[in-house]
Amino acid sequence: MKAVNVVVLVVAAVLAVASAEDNRDKLIPEYMAAAMDCVKDYEMDFTVCKEMMKDGVNLAEEKFTPCKCVPACVAKKRKLMSEDGEYDVDAFTKAVNEFGYEPWSEEYKKVFPICKDSYKGKKNCEAAAALAVCAWKNSKMMRDTVGQYMGQMDGE
Image (cartoon, rainbow, N blue to C red; front, side, top):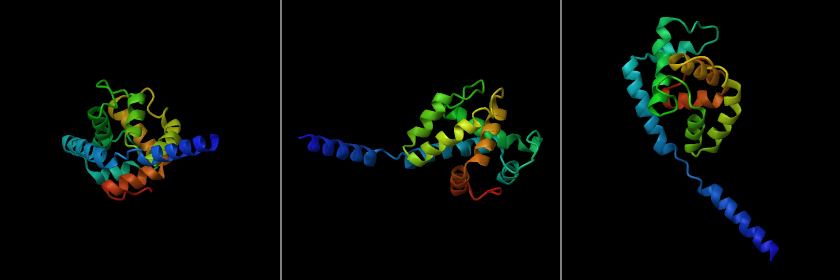
């Protein structure tokens, strides 16, 4: 009888994992729509943003402002950042997990601890830029995913 219970539990666990919903097809278009609205609002130039990700770049240069503000704009639209410009870590973590894609959740668990202090003491565009640059430098998966949706970027 115990063996049957174990088998039932194993099968239930496998089915639970197999049925875990991958929401990327639903959520990526929502994030992309928010991003495209923000790109228009800030008149962002992807060529300039590619340059921003290179080592040794002075992020204080005015030309990078749209590149720094678009991620903050998206974060605010998706309620991952408060209107006063502070990240809501719980909402951010929930959003990553909401995608239901285990590789992204695992990558977040690996990269966020490395980058969580990068935006401390910063708000709005500066916080978003600090987190984006840190994640870019520490996550090949992020670079690959951004490349898939936005075109390949230098500094990979």
